[in-house]
Length: 267
Image (tube, rainbow, N blue to C red; front, side, top):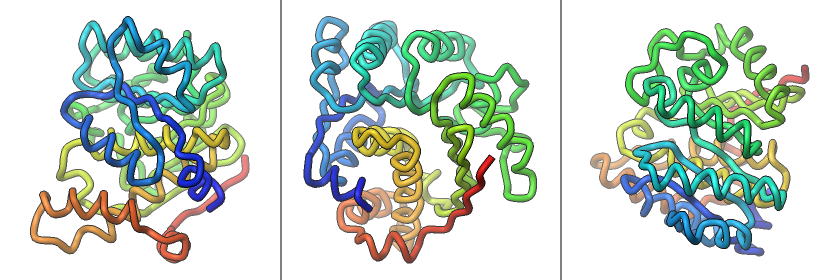
């Protein structure tokens, strides 16, 4: 709760390089939790923008040459200045261009958080995945019953990269190689509007500005799932999108504690 309140109090500047499909919703999600978004992506200015920001979020959805160039510039600046950063591995399971680029970004920029679905994470690990476009393949879905093998793979990736690994899905897994959290909050409607994964990346960026990378990532993922649950009793997907942002803005600490469903594992 301290992280959540600290972001509201300090209003950190969060630099998001995301895609035009979701850019407005990402900015509004950052604002909803009390931070300040800046969505700069021109290669000639992003180094200055990142340097004065408190966190960086980059997203591989709908990539272009300019956006790829800008993300690398910003990622290198963030690493140099010890600014927390998160990369969202959108589509690396179905595109060699994105996969090669993501590996280059991770190698050169050393992100604090690496986020993706299980198909995307398996691709990064060099394991055959079964992605369905940018979505997780049915054979890759993680459940509480088959999670142990996946957790070991994620812990290894975390220790290799120095990043917190965040896998999103019906079961969310977050690990820093030592501590692992399994979160089961969420609802089907989160997958029925575009950009909720991108919004989550921006939310993670907002909270890791606190410097507490693991707990901030757990907080962001739990909040997205809980706010999805609170928003689903609506007429349709358009109303759900509005309710999702409203609930992110208004959710109380007591509601978060009441609704969160998680397990933690050590080693």
